[in-house]
Length: 177
Image (cartoon, rainbow, N blue to C red):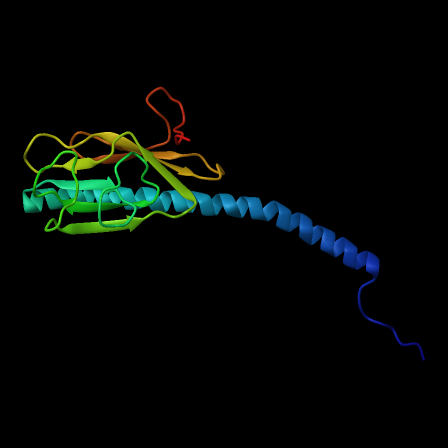
């Protein structure tokens, strides 16, 4: 009686492994692009939310509310690199440039994902309820690996943000090196 062996031949095994390797090779870059887009969207949404909260808090408190880059989550870092994170605080002493001092309430902190870079053309965004106008400017959010297109959060003089993918000249936004 002949017993039939079940299993794969070496040829079938190599062919199957080759097909799996090709499929994984095609799928991983696509998945990394999806992940990068999701991280950029998450950071844009966090900034968008922070600006709306800052506008609301400035009206409710009838005081100046500042959004600035921060490395430690307590003080403004200065400069225009927002890649470490940012803080929002009530600027009671109206100093310039705004700097959080003891006694000034910290309203919000945020830490940015390591794979994302954020640059701005302003060191701070100041929102005022009734005095003067808010700081306008642009925050550009990029993937550090360059896998996906950058997005920008453009803030108007009224403090209202909008998301954009191109400048007014039709050029894509790019993070400074």
